[in-house]
Length: 269
Ligand code: CA
Image (cartoon, rainbow, N blue to C red; front, side, top):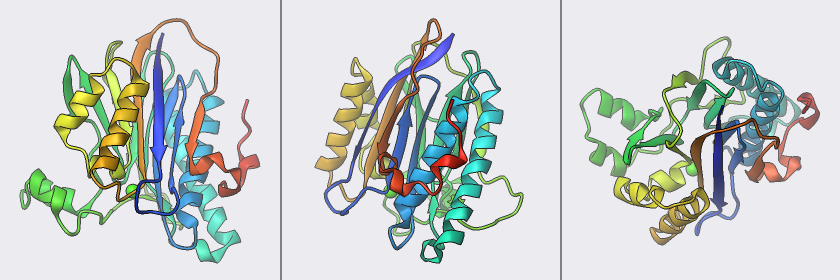
């Protein structure tokens, strides 16, 4: 059976005074969420989403991972809306979400915003997610090169995220099945990493033997490049083996349950 064997590191960075990123690393689910919003709402958005998605996925180990991720995104949206209803100062809060899930045979990715998922297959690095940003749209339309996008003054303008507002039945996240195999390595990261670390640095660090060393090296490199934002990265090896017991590890803002709008809304098994 397929599962993930991985490790994550998050760091507040050198400029921000608190960490608005959250992450989860488990054998059947891993994710990164990067929150935005004034009045301490960024960490509420990322923590609430991380908690809702991980708790829901833990309760559905055998379901189609695409369905699990779609349901989890819907639950997170309800929770974010509830959070704004309870405290109007959180209006405008939102979060990215980049999550991978597996039921042991299928692997799915859910993605919204400008966090990223990468795959290393047979030593070659490929970006699996497409940034929901204004500059990425310009790249896809042929108006900018990827190098120009990297330094563009509007590179942080995100077109899609999980909002704390009611946007109706619109599908906000891309959900797709991934073609991965044992031996592949996945990287999930917030833009605090991908804005500061080059593809060559990513490839080099991801070639390190164990996920913990790779994740720690990448965070060190983002800090060395200025650490201007919160930095989160999760490195996962896709492995084949018997089902394991163990829920996973929470990282970043979600480690403080005060940041989760309503922890009891999701029953963990
Ligand atoms: Ca960020």
